[in-house]
Length: 516
Ligand code: XMP
Image (cartoon, rainbow, N blue to C red; front, side, top):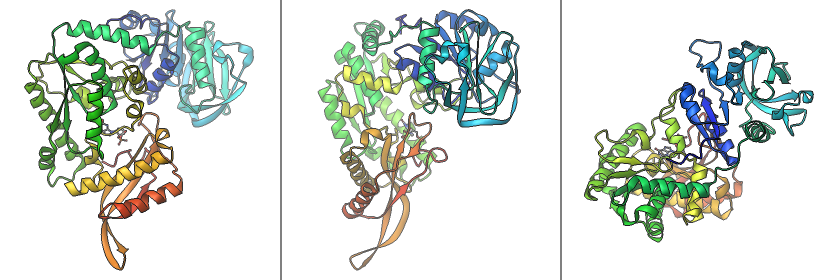
Protein backbone atom coordinates (compact mmCIF):
# COMPACT_ATOMS: atom_id res chain seq x y z
CA UNK A 1 0.00 0.00 0.00
CA UNK A 2 1.33 3.38 -0.96
CA UNK A 3 -0.33 5.77 1.46
CA UNK A 4 1.97 7.09 4.16
CA UNK A 5 -0.45 7.76 7.02
CA UNK A 6 1.15 4.91 8.92
CA UNK A 7 3.97 7.08 10.22
CA UNK A 8 3.11 8.43 13.64
CA UNK A 9 1.79 5.08 14.84
CA UNK A 10 3.06 2.49 17.28
CA UNK A 11 5.59 -0.14 16.29
CA UNK A 12 5.58 -3.44 18.18
CA UNK A 13 8.72 -5.54 18.19
CA UNK A 14 7.80 -9.19 18.60
CA UNK A 15 9.80 -11.43 20.91
CA UNK A 16 7.40 -14.33 20.34
CA UNK A 17 4.67 -13.71 22.90
CA UNK A 18 1.28 -15.30 22.28
CA UNK A 19 -0.17 -11.84 23.07
CA UNK A 20 1.76 -9.76 20.52
CA UNK A 21 -1.18 -9.52 18.12
CA UNK A 22 -3.41 -8.54 20.98
CA UNK A 23 -1.17 -5.54 21.75
CA UNK A 24 -1.48 -4.39 18.13
CA UNK A 25 -5.25 -4.82 18.17
CA UNK A 26 -5.59 -2.86 21.41
CA UNK A 27 -3.63 0.04 19.91
CA UNK A 28 -5.80 -0.02 16.78
CA UNK A 29 -8.91 0.07 18.98
CA UNK A 30 -7.69 3.59 19.87
CA UNK A 31 -7.73 4.35 16.10
CA UNK A 32 -3.95 4.56 16.07
CA UNK A 33 -2.03 2.58 13.45
CA UNK A 34 0.13 -0.21 14.84
CA UNK A 35 2.43 -2.60 13.11
CA UNK A 36 4.36 -5.67 14.27
CA UNK A 37 7.92 -6.38 13.18
CA UNK A 38 10.15 -9.24 14.27
CA UNK A 39 12.46 -8.27 17.12
CA UNK A 40 15.53 -8.45 14.87
CA UNK A 41 14.28 -5.67 12.56
CA UNK A 42 17.09 -3.24 11.73
CA UNK A 43 17.25 0.27 13.15
CA UNK A 44 17.04 1.57 9.57
CA UNK A 45 13.81 -0.31 8.90
CA UNK A 46 12.33 0.91 12.17
CA UNK A 47 13.31 4.53 11.53
CA UNK A 48 11.82 4.39 8.05
CA UNK A 49 8.40 3.74 9.60
CA UNK A 50 8.74 6.87 11.74
CA UNK A 51 6.81 5.46 14.72
CA UNK A 52 5.90 7.71 17.63
CA UNK A 53 6.43 4.90 20.08
CA UNK A 54 7.84 1.38 20.29
CA UNK A 55 6.48 -1.50 22.36
CA UNK A 56 8.73 -4.46 23.14
CA UNK A 57 6.49 -7.51 23.55
CA UNK A 58 6.77 -10.42 25.94
CA UNK A 59 8.31 -13.69 24.82
CA UNK A 60 8.85 -17.31 25.79
CA UNK A 61 12.64 -17.15 26.30
CA UNK A 62 14.74 -15.88 29.21
CA UNK A 63 16.90 -12.77 28.78
CA UNK A 64 19.60 -14.52 30.84
CA UNK A 65 19.37 -17.86 29.01
CA UNK A 66 21.20 -19.02 25.88
CA UNK A 67 19.77 -17.79 22.54
CA UNK A 68 17.97 -14.89 24.22
CA UNK A 69 16.61 -12.67 21.41
CA UNK A 70 18.19 -9.25 21.64
CA UNK A 71 17.81 -5.93 19.88
CA UNK A 72 20.13 -3.13 18.87
CA UNK A 73 20.51 -1.04 22.09
CA UNK A 74 20.09 2.09 19.92
CA UNK A 75 16.38 1.24 19.70
CA UNK A 76 16.02 1.60 23.46
CA UNK A 77 18.55 4.41 23.89
CA UNK A 78 17.30 6.57 20.97
CA UNK A 79 14.79 9.32 21.56
CA UNK A 80 11.55 7.43 20.79
CA UNK A 81 9.29 6.50 23.74
CA UNK A 82 9.57 2.79 24.57
CA UNK A 83 7.24 0.52 26.53
CA UNK A 84 8.60 -2.88 27.55
CA UNK A 85 6.17 -5.63 28.52
CA UNK A 86 7.34 -8.74 30.47
CA UNK A 87 10.35 -9.97 28.41
CA UNK A 88 10.50 -6.43 27.00
CA UNK A 89 10.84 -5.00 30.52
CA UNK A 90 13.60 -7.43 31.42
CA UNK A 91 15.45 -6.68 28.19
CA UNK A 92 15.33 -2.94 28.92
CA UNK A 93 16.67 -3.55 32.43
CA UNK A 94 19.47 -5.77 31.15
CA UNK A 95 20.41 -3.47 28.26
CA UNK A 96 20.60 -0.38 30.47
CA UNK A 97 22.77 -1.93 33.20
CA UNK A 98 20.23 -3.44 35.60
CA UNK A 99 20.12 -7.13 36.47
CA UNK A 100 17.65 -9.92 35.74
CA UNK A 101 17.62 -13.19 37.68
CA UNK A 102 15.51 -16.27 37.94
CA UNK A 103 12.79 -15.60 40.56
CA UNK A 104 12.16 -18.03 43.41
CA UNK A 105 8.69 -19.01 42.28
CA UNK A 106 7.77 -17.00 39.21
CA UNK A 107 4.33 -15.42 38.94
CA UNK A 108 1.56 -16.82 36.77
CA UNK A 109 -2.02 -15.63 36.34
CA UNK A 110 -3.94 -13.02 38.30
CA UNK A 111 -1.57 -11.16 40.66
CA UNK A 112 -2.07 -8.17 42.94
CA UNK A 113 0.32 -5.24 42.41
CA UNK A 114 0.70 -1.97 44.31
CA UNK A 115 1.62 1.29 42.58
CA UNK A 116 3.58 4.09 44.19
CA UNK A 117 1.45 7.14 43.33
CA UNK A 118 4.15 9.54 44.55
CA UNK A 119 6.21 8.75 41.42
CA UNK A 120 3.72 10.61 39.24
CA UNK A 121 4.48 8.47 36.16
CA UNK A 122 2.11 9.04 33.22
CA UNK A 123 1.51 5.30 32.77
CA UNK A 124 -0.28 5.40 36.16
CA UNK A 125 -2.75 8.13 35.10
CA UNK A 126 -6.16 7.17 36.49
CA UNK A 127 -4.91 3.85 37.90
CA UNK A 128 -5.73 3.20 41.59
CA UNK A 129 -3.04 2.24 44.14
CA UNK A 130 -3.63 -1.52 43.97
CA UNK A 131 -4.94 -3.58 41.05
CA UNK A 132 -5.06 -7.16 39.75
CA UNK A 133 -2.87 -7.81 36.73
CA UNK A 134 -1.99 -10.77 34.48
CA UNK A 135 1.53 -12.07 35.11
CA UNK A 136 3.36 -14.80 33.24
CA UNK A 137 7.06 -14.84 34.10
CA UNK A 138 9.77 -16.76 35.83
CA UNK A 139 12.67 -14.26 35.71
CA UNK A 140 12.47 -10.93 37.53
CA UNK A 141 14.28 -7.60 37.48
CA UNK A 142 16.48 -7.55 40.63
CA UNK A 143 18.46 -4.33 40.22
CA UNK A 144 17.09 -1.40 38.31
CA UNK A 145 19.30 0.51 35.87
CA UNK A 146 20.80 3.70 37.31
CA UNK A 147 18.23 6.50 37.22
CA UNK A 148 15.18 4.20 37.02
CA UNK A 149 12.19 4.77 39.29
CA UNK A 150 10.42 1.75 40.78
CA UNK A 151 6.72 2.32 40.12
CA UNK A 152 5.09 -0.87 41.37
CA UNK A 153 5.68 -4.17 43.08
CA UNK A 154 3.79 -7.40 43.35
CA UNK A 155 2.84 -9.20 46.59
CA UNK A 156 6.02 -11.27 46.39
CA UNK A 157 8.06 -8.05 46.45
CA UNK A 158 9.17 -8.35 42.80
CA UNK A 159 9.47 -5.16 40.75
CA UNK A 160 6.30 -4.90 38.64
CA UNK A 161 6.99 -1.60 36.81
CA UNK A 162 9.66 1.06 36.42
CA UNK A 163 10.26 4.19 34.37
CA UNK A 164 13.29 6.17 33.19
CA UNK A 165 14.10 9.50 31.58
CA UNK A 166 10.84 11.05 32.71
CA UNK A 167 8.26 8.91 30.95
CA UNK A 168 10.30 8.09 27.83
CA UNK A 169 10.99 4.56 28.98
CA UNK A 170 8.28 2.60 30.77
CA UNK A 171 8.55 -1.06 31.71
CA UNK A 172 5.76 -3.34 32.95
CA UNK A 173 6.32 -6.87 34.20
CA UNK A 174 2.62 -7.70 33.66
CA UNK A 175 0.54 -7.74 30.47
CA UNK A 176 -1.67 -4.62 30.09
CA UNK A 177 -3.05 -6.03 26.81
CA UNK A 178 -4.73 -9.01 28.53
CA UNK A 179 -8.36 -8.53 29.62
CA UNK A 180 -7.64 -9.77 33.18
CA UNK A 181 -5.34 -6.81 33.86
CA UNK A 182 -7.45 -4.10 35.45
CA UNK A 183 -6.89 -0.68 33.87
CA UNK A 184 -4.80 -2.35 31.12
CA UNK A 185 -6.52 -0.31 28.39
CA UNK A 186 -6.02 2.89 30.38
CA UNK A 187 -2.30 2.17 30.73
CA UNK A 188 -1.89 1.46 27.02
CA UNK A 189 -3.90 4.58 26.22
CA UNK A 190 -1.61 6.66 28.50
CA UNK A 191 1.41 5.31 26.63
CA UNK A 192 -0.07 5.88 23.18
CA UNK A 193 -1.58 9.33 23.72
CA UNK A 194 -0.01 10.97 26.81
CA UNK A 195 3.53 9.67 26.40
CA UNK A 196 3.88 9.19 22.61
CA UNK A 197 1.47 11.95 21.57
CA UNK A 198 -0.24 9.85 18.87
CA UNK A 199 -3.43 11.07 17.17
CA UNK A 200 -6.49 8.90 16.59
CA UNK A 201 -6.37 9.01 12.79
CA UNK A 202 -6.55 5.35 11.72
CA UNK A 203 -10.16 5.39 10.45
CA UNK A 204 -11.52 2.45 8.52
CA UNK A 205 -13.66 4.69 6.26
CA UNK A 206 -10.49 6.50 5.16
CA UNK A 207 -8.75 3.14 4.79
CA UNK A 208 -11.37 2.04 2.24
CA UNK A 209 -10.93 5.23 0.19
CA UNK A 210 -7.14 4.96 0.19
CA UNK A 211 -7.18 1.26 -0.57
CA UNK A 212 -9.49 1.74 -3.55
CA UNK A 213 -7.05 4.34 -4.89
CA UNK A 214 -4.12 1.93 -4.35
CA UNK A 215 -5.95 -0.93 -6.12
CA UNK A 216 -6.73 1.39 -9.04
CA UNK A 217 -3.05 2.22 -9.35
CA UNK A 218 -2.02 -1.44 -9.11
CA UNK A 219 -4.39 -2.95 -11.66
CA UNK A 220 -4.59 0.01 -14.02
CA UNK A 221 -7.31 0.32 -16.67
CA UNK A 222 -7.06 -3.10 -18.32
CA UNK A 223 -5.68 -5.83 -16.01
CA UNK A 224 -7.96 -8.75 -15.23
CA UNK A 225 -8.24 -10.18 -11.70
CA UNK A 226 -9.28 -13.66 -10.63
CA UNK A 227 -10.43 -14.51 -7.13
CA UNK A 228 -11.32 -17.68 -5.24
CA UNK A 229 -14.39 -17.11 -3.08
CA UNK A 230 -14.81 -19.48 -0.16
CA UNK A 231 -18.10 -18.21 1.24
CA UNK A 232 -16.13 -16.73 4.16
CA UNK A 233 -15.87 -13.14 5.32
CA UNK A 234 -12.31 -12.32 4.23
CA UNK A 235 -12.52 -13.42 0.60
CA UNK A 236 -15.95 -11.81 0.24
CA UNK A 237 -14.82 -8.44 1.61
CA UNK A 238 -11.69 -8.55 -0.59
CA UNK A 239 -13.76 -9.35 -3.70
CA UNK A 240 -16.38 -6.64 -3.09
CA UNK A 241 -13.61 -4.11 -2.50
CA UNK A 242 -11.80 -4.96 -5.73
CA UNK A 243 -15.05 -5.19 -7.71
CA UNK A 244 -15.62 -1.48 -6.97
CA UNK A 245 -12.52 -0.75 -9.06
CA UNK A 246 -12.31 -3.71 -11.46
CA UNK A 247 -16.02 -4.10 -12.31
CA UNK A 248 -16.38 -6.96 -14.78
CA UNK A 249 -12.60 -7.38 -15.02
CA UNK A 250 -12.97 -9.39 -11.78
CA UNK A 251 -13.78 -13.09 -12.20
CA UNK A 252 -14.76 -14.91 -9.02
CA UNK A 253 -14.60 -18.67 -8.70
CA UNK A 254 -16.50 -20.53 -5.99
CA UNK A 255 -15.13 -24.07 -5.75
CA UNK A 256 -17.86 -26.06 -4.01
CA UNK A 257 -16.21 -29.08 -2.38
CA UNK A 258 -19.51 -30.36 -1.02
CA UNK A 259 -18.49 -29.96 2.64
CA UNK A 260 -20.50 -26.81 3.28
CA UNK A 261 -23.24 -26.43 5.88
CA UNK A 262 -26.93 -26.85 5.16
CA UNK A 263 -28.11 -24.51 2.33
CA UNK A 264 -24.84 -22.60 2.58
CA UNK A 265 -23.83 -22.69 -1.09
CA UNK A 266 -27.25 -21.41 -2.25
CA UNK A 267 -27.38 -18.63 0.34
CA UNK A 268 -23.85 -17.47 -0.32
CA UNK A 269 -24.39 -17.44 -4.09
CA UNK A 270 -27.58 -15.40 -3.71
CA UNK A 271 -25.70 -12.88 -1.64
CA UNK A 272 -22.85 -12.68 -4.18
CA UNK A 273 -25.41 -11.95 -6.85
CA UNK A 274 -26.94 -9.19 -4.74
CA UNK A 275 -23.45 -7.74 -4.31
CA UNK A 276 -22.99 -7.72 -8.11
CA UNK A 277 -20.11 -10.17 -8.09
CA UNK A 278 -19.69 -12.32 -11.18
CA UNK A 279 -19.24 -15.78 -9.73
CA UNK A 280 -18.61 -19.12 -11.40
CA UNK A 281 -19.99 -21.96 -9.26
CA UNK A 282 -17.66 -24.92 -9.79
CA UNK A 283 -19.41 -28.03 -8.51
CA UNK A 284 -16.70 -30.43 -7.48
CA UNK A 285 -18.41 -32.56 -4.81
CA UNK A 286 -17.88 -35.79 -6.75
CA UNK A 287 -14.19 -35.15 -7.37
CA UNK A 288 -13.61 -34.50 -3.68
CA UNK A 289 -15.61 -37.56 -2.59
CA UNK A 290 -13.70 -39.75 -5.05
CA UNK A 291 -10.35 -38.41 -3.87
CA UNK A 292 -11.28 -39.02 -0.23
CA UNK A 293 -12.80 -42.48 -0.66
CA UNK A 294 -11.80 -44.70 2.26
CA UNK A 295 -9.60 -42.01 3.84
CA UNK A 296 -9.96 -41.53 7.62
CA UNK A 297 -6.64 -39.94 8.65
CA UNK A 298 -7.21 -36.28 9.61
CA UNK A 299 -3.89 -35.12 8.20
CA UNK A 300 -4.24 -36.97 4.91
CA UNK A 301 -7.82 -35.72 4.51
CA UNK A 302 -6.65 -32.13 4.92
CA UNK A 303 -3.76 -32.62 2.47
CA UNK A 304 -5.96 -34.25 -0.18
CA UNK A 305 -8.58 -31.50 0.12
CA UNK A 306 -5.98 -28.70 0.03
CA UNK A 307 -4.16 -30.09 -3.02
CA UNK A 308 -7.34 -30.82 -4.99
CA UNK A 309 -8.76 -27.42 -4.14
CA UNK A 310 -5.70 -25.65 -5.55
CA UNK A 311 -5.76 -27.87 -8.67
CA UNK A 312 -9.44 -27.21 -9.40
CA UNK A 313 -9.02 -23.52 -8.75
CA UNK A 314 -6.07 -23.38 -11.14
CA UNK A 315 -8.02 -25.20 -13.87
CA UNK A 316 -10.92 -22.77 -13.48
CA UNK A 317 -8.65 -19.73 -13.34
CA UNK A 318 -6.95 -20.81 -16.58
CA UNK A 319 -10.36 -21.05 -18.20
CA UNK A 320 -10.96 -17.42 -17.19
CA UNK A 321 -8.35 -16.24 -19.64
CA UNK A 322 -5.37 -14.05 -19.04
CA UNK A 323 -5.79 -12.71 -15.52
CA UNK A 324 -2.73 -10.83 -14.34
CA UNK A 325 -3.71 -10.74 -10.68
CA UNK A 326 -4.80 -13.37 -8.16
CA UNK A 327 -6.90 -11.74 -5.43
CA UNK A 328 -6.66 -13.28 -1.96
CA UNK A 329 -8.35 -12.43 1.34
CA UNK A 330 -5.10 -12.72 3.32
CA UNK A 331 -5.37 -10.80 6.60
CA UNK A 332 -2.70 -9.53 9.00
CA UNK A 333 -2.60 -12.53 11.38
CA UNK A 334 -1.97 -14.79 8.32
CA UNK A 335 0.97 -12.60 7.33
CA UNK A 336 2.42 -12.58 10.83
CA UNK A 337 1.93 -16.29 11.47
CA UNK A 338 3.53 -17.23 8.19
CA UNK A 339 7.03 -16.13 8.88
CA UNK A 340 7.99 -14.43 12.05
CA UNK A 341 11.11 -14.60 14.12
CA UNK A 342 10.88 -13.66 17.85
CA UNK A 343 9.53 -16.97 19.04
CA UNK A 344 9.02 -19.63 16.41
CA UNK A 345 7.12 -19.77 13.15
CA UNK A 346 3.66 -20.80 14.29
CA UNK A 347 2.23 -22.29 11.09
CA UNK A 348 2.37 -21.87 7.37
CA UNK A 349 -0.96 -20.39 6.37
CA UNK A 350 -2.78 -21.79 3.39
CA UNK A 351 -3.38 -18.32 1.88
CA UNK A 352 0.28 -17.45 1.99
CA UNK A 353 2.15 -20.72 1.81
CA UNK A 354 -0.06 -23.00 -0.29
CA UNK A 355 0.30 -21.45 -3.71
CA UNK A 356 1.96 -23.24 -6.61
CA UNK A 357 5.56 -22.11 -7.09
CA UNK A 358 5.16 -21.72 -10.87
CA UNK A 359 2.21 -19.38 -10.53
CA UNK A 360 2.36 -16.66 -13.20
CA UNK A 361 -0.14 -14.25 -11.63
CA UNK A 362 0.84 -11.53 -9.14
CA UNK A 363 -0.85 -11.51 -5.76
CA UNK A 364 -3.35 -8.82 -4.86
CA UNK A 365 -3.95 -8.83 -1.10
CA UNK A 366 -5.76 -5.65 -0.11
CA UNK A 367 -6.62 -6.84 3.43
CA UNK A 368 -3.13 -7.90 4.45
CA UNK A 369 -2.77 -5.14 7.03
CA UNK A 370 -6.13 -5.67 8.76
CA UNK A 371 -7.24 -7.76 11.70
CA UNK A 372 -10.39 -9.89 11.48
CA UNK A 373 -12.49 -7.49 13.54
CA UNK A 374 -11.42 -4.64 11.23
CA UNK A 375 -12.43 -6.68 8.17
CA UNK A 376 -15.83 -7.25 9.78
CA UNK A 377 -16.18 -3.51 10.40
CA UNK A 378 -15.41 -2.72 6.74
CA UNK A 379 -18.16 -5.07 5.55
CA UNK A 380 -21.07 -2.67 6.24
CA UNK A 381 -19.19 0.15 4.45
CA UNK A 382 -19.35 -2.10 1.38
CA UNK A 383 -23.05 -3.02 1.92
CA UNK A 384 -22.29 -6.61 2.94
CA UNK A 385 -25.18 -7.80 5.17
CA UNK A 386 -24.31 -7.89 8.88
CA UNK A 387 -25.75 -11.40 9.46
CA UNK A 388 -23.16 -12.67 6.97
CA UNK A 389 -20.29 -10.80 8.64
CA UNK A 390 -21.23 -12.18 12.05
CA UNK A 391 -21.21 -15.83 10.95
CA UNK A 392 -19.04 -18.15 13.01
CA UNK A 393 -15.64 -19.06 11.52
CA UNK A 394 -15.69 -22.22 9.41
CA UNK A 395 -12.63 -24.30 8.47
CA UNK A 396 -11.54 -24.40 4.81
CA UNK A 397 -11.97 -28.22 4.56
CA UNK A 398 -15.46 -27.72 6.01
CA UNK A 399 -17.54 -30.60 7.32
CA UNK A 400 -14.92 -33.08 6.08
CA UNK A 401 -12.93 -32.40 9.28
CA UNK A 402 -16.05 -32.64 11.44
CA UNK A 403 -17.19 -35.96 10.00
CA UNK A 404 -14.86 -38.41 11.71
CA UNK A 405 -14.30 -41.82 10.20
CA UNK A 406 -15.51 -42.67 6.72
CA UNK A 407 -16.80 -39.80 4.60
CA UNK A 408 -19.98 -40.74 2.79
CA UNK A 409 -22.70 -38.56 1.32
CA UNK A 410 -25.17 -40.03 3.79
CA UNK A 411 -22.99 -39.32 6.85
CA UNK A 412 -22.29 -35.76 5.63
CA UNK A 413 -26.04 -35.17 5.26
CA UNK A 414 -26.58 -36.51 8.78
CA UNK A 415 -24.01 -34.06 10.12
CA UNK A 416 -25.45 -31.16 8.08
CA UNK A 417 -28.97 -31.73 9.48
CA UNK A 418 -27.79 -32.11 13.09
CA UNK A 419 -25.61 -29.02 12.81
CA UNK A 420 -28.48 -26.94 11.39
CA UNK A 421 -30.72 -27.95 14.33
CA UNK A 422 -28.10 -27.15 16.99
CA UNK A 423 -27.26 -23.76 15.46
CA UNK A 424 -30.94 -22.85 15.02
CA UNK A 425 -31.55 -23.60 18.73
CA UNK A 426 -28.60 -21.38 19.65
CA UNK A 427 -29.96 -18.60 17.44
CA UNK A 428 -33.47 -18.93 18.93
CA UNK A 429 -31.96 -18.57 22.41
CA UNK A 430 -30.29 -15.31 21.27
CA UNK A 431 -26.84 -16.69 21.99
CA UNK A 432 -25.34 -16.93 18.49
CA UNK A 433 -23.55 -13.57 18.46
CA UNK A 434 -21.95 -14.10 21.89
CA UNK A 435 -20.42 -17.46 20.91
CA UNK A 436 -17.20 -17.80 18.89
CA UNK A 437 -18.18 -21.10 17.26
CA UNK A 438 -21.01 -23.58 17.76
CA UNK A 439 -21.23 -26.72 15.64
CA UNK A 440 -21.77 -30.48 15.58
CA UNK A 441 -19.25 -33.25 14.99
CA UNK A 442 -20.20 -36.72 13.77
CA UNK A 443 -18.20 -39.30 15.71
CA UNK A 444 -16.93 -42.62 14.36
CA UNK A 445 -18.82 -44.42 17.13
CA UNK A 446 -22.10 -46.29 17.01
CA UNK A 447 -24.07 -47.15 20.10
CA UNK A 448 -27.06 -49.20 21.14
CA UNK A 449 -30.41 -47.52 21.79
CA UNK A 450 -34.08 -48.26 21.80
CA UNK A 451 -36.88 -46.79 19.68
CA UNK A 452 -40.39 -48.08 20.27
CA UNK A 453 -39.71 -51.68 21.12
CA UNK A 454 -36.86 -52.05 18.71
CA UNK A 455 -33.14 -52.06 19.28
CA UNK A 456 -31.22 -49.34 17.38
CA UNK A 457 -27.54 -49.01 16.63
CA UNK A 458 -27.11 -45.39 15.64
CA UNK A 459 -24.54 -42.68 14.98
CA UNK A 460 -23.23 -40.30 17.67
CA UNK A 461 -23.28 -36.52 17.37
CA UNK A 462 -21.12 -34.29 19.60
CA UNK A 463 -22.19 -30.70 20.32
CA UNK A 464 -19.40 -28.13 20.62
CA UNK A 465 -19.72 -24.45 21.57
CA UNK A 466 -16.70 -22.33 22.46
CA UNK A 467 -15.85 -18.80 23.53
CA UNK A 468 -12.64 -17.33 22.22
CA UNK A 469 -10.96 -14.07 21.36
CA UNK A 470 -8.75 -15.19 18.51
CA UNK A 471 -9.04 -19.02 18.31
CA UNK A 472 -5.56 -19.39 19.86
CA UNK A 473 -7.21 -20.44 23.13
CA UNK A 474 -10.86 -21.28 23.78
CA UNK A 475 -13.22 -22.14 26.60
CA UNK A 476 -16.29 -24.33 26.41
CA UNK A 477 -19.54 -22.33 26.69
CA UNK A 478 -21.87 -23.29 29.54
CA UNK A 479 -25.04 -23.50 27.49
CA UNK A 480 -28.41 -23.48 29.28
CA UNK A 481 -29.34 -27.10 29.93
CA UNK A 482 -32.82 -26.65 28.44
CA UNK A 483 -31.21 -25.67 25.14
CA UNK A 484 -28.86 -28.67 25.14
CA UNK A 485 -31.73 -30.99 26.05
CA UNK A 486 -33.98 -29.60 23.30
CA UNK A 487 -31.22 -29.80 20.68
CA UNK A 488 -30.42 -33.41 21.67
CA UNK A 489 -34.09 -34.48 21.52
CA UNK A 490 -34.61 -32.78 18.16
CA UNK A 491 -31.43 -34.23 16.64
CA UNK A 492 -32.32 -37.79 17.74
CA UNK A 493 -35.95 -37.32 16.69
CA UNK A 494 -35.51 -35.51 13.37
CA UNK A 495 -32.22 -36.72 11.92
CA UNK A 496 -32.24 -40.28 10.58
CA UNK A 497 -29.52 -42.64 11.89
CA UNK A 498 -28.58 -40.60 15.01
CA UNK A 499 -29.04 -42.49 18.27
CA UNK A 500 -27.01 -40.49 20.77
CA UNK A 501 -25.90 -36.89 21.42
CA UNK A 502 -22.94 -35.99 23.65
CA UNK A 503 -21.42 -32.66 24.63
CA UNK A 504 -17.76 -31.71 24.22
CA UNK A 505 -16.78 -29.53 27.21
CA UNK A 506 -13.02 -29.41 26.60
CA UNK A 507 -11.12 -26.15 26.36
CA UNK A 508 -8.23 -25.30 24.03
CA UNK A 509 -5.71 -26.28 25.23
CA UNK A 510 -5.64 -29.23 25.69
CA UNK A 511 -8.08 -29.87 22.80
CA UNK A 512 -8.25 -27.87 19.57
CA UNK A 513 -11.52 -26.28 18.53
CA UNK A 514 -12.01 -28.65 15.59
CA UNK A 515 -11.73 -32.39 16.19
CA UNK A 516 -9.45 -33.06 13.21
P1 XMP B 1 -8.24 -25.35 15.87
O1 XMP B 1 -9.03 -26.56 15.55
O2 XMP B 1 -6.82 -25.41 15.36
O3 XMP B 1 -8.92 -24.17 15.03
O4 XMP B 1 -8.31 -24.96 17.32
C1 XMP B 1 -8.68 -22.79 15.25
C2 XMP B 1 -9.60 -22.00 14.34
O5 XMP B 1 -9.24 -22.20 12.98
C3 XMP B 1 -10.33 -22.75 12.26
N1 XMP B 1 -9.74 -23.72 11.34
C4 XMP B 1 -9.48 -23.47 10.04
N2 XMP B 1 -9.72 -22.38 9.29
N3 XMP B 1 -8.80 -23.49 7.40
C5 XMP B 1 -9.37 -22.40 7.96
O6 XMP B 1 -9.59 -21.41 7.25
C6 XMP B 1 -8.54 -24.62 8.09
O7 XMP B 1 -8.01 -25.60 7.56
C7 XMP B 1 -8.89 -24.60 9.49
N4 XMP B 1 -8.78 -25.51 10.49
C8 XMP B 1 -9.30 -24.95 11.60
C9 XMP B 1 -11.23 -23.39 13.30
O8 XMP B 1 -12.58 -23.49 12.85
C10 XMP B 1 -11.06 -22.42 14.45
O9 XMP B 1 -11.85 -21.25 14.28
